[in-house]
Length: 421
Image (cartoon, rainbow, N blue to C red; front, side, top):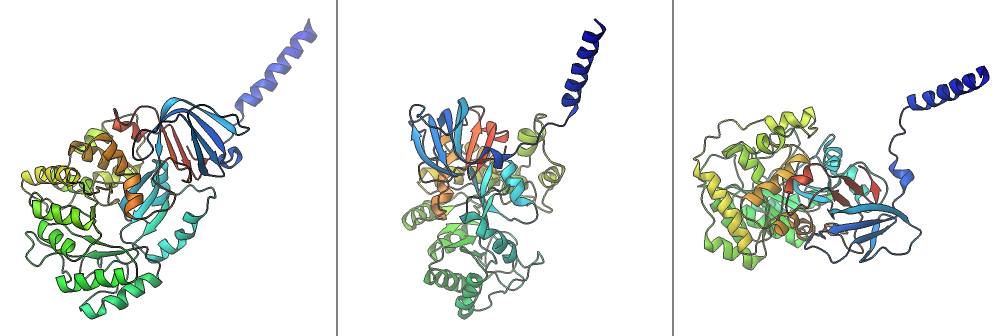
């Protein structure tokens, strides 16, 4: 009996040791990047797909199936949950840990609208391979085009500025040399209804767009009022990288944008911080289930100084956004993080909530952060759940058509076929 008790105690002691050992860390590389995921309900970036299983090989989606295929690949149980493409934030400013922060929230690709060209050059090579990464992929404008002492010159990045239209071609060539994927131009009409930094002239705007197009680069324009938006579209801009709220968009501008194929990135979350300032408390801070990092809370809680605008300006913004969509203008989701009222990753989902508030239907809201930015910026292999696309995938607990806030806590995130969450 004593021997049996001693043996039992020995077994208990051994088991106890194993129980006290730390749990092995999740190792995405060990899991590989080839698998079958299903059964799931799929929003493919445009519509709900007529398929239930996703086949991934070497980080690429190779097929969608209606029934589980016979395969030696690893099988991941989807439990009939929802799947959609990894999110694309069409307007950020990235440095430091921004790319990690975005991927942690399900944003697998970001489009940087102005930043240090060295940061862009460092990360450009990573977007063309399918290696394991804990960072979102980066596409970017690099240095923007602006006037001396204009917007963009105040952030400590050395920016060559435009003083005359004849300089446009050489400055565009300089930006191509430093790696710009497209050209961003800052412009404000000389009679804009509220204060702004010095701006290039309309002639210089036109010259910059023409120089970009001559080099086969897209030109997008930073605007913040209706008159500047009209000038930019008339000058040949491919996209507007903010909306405006000083007035409701006119039928004339809507028709011109439609005829010219111009898209818009409203960045409503930034304007919401200026004009209303309640969305973060309602959607983020009041949700005790969300683990919002201290650094994110800090920028989400920041406010703009001296921004006392009339109450109807926010109504103008909502109505303009709804009119843009109804007119068939591509509306892309962009957070402008990490400006005040925003944080990388979190605020793209808030932007989608604001697009929903503006009256966009659910499929258009979701497409604004998936297919639409991929199409507008010609991003290869991104924005869709379809054969030939990268396996940048979100797994969601609930239907994003019924509960958009399910995006705040994705059940799974895959980047290049590797599960990172």
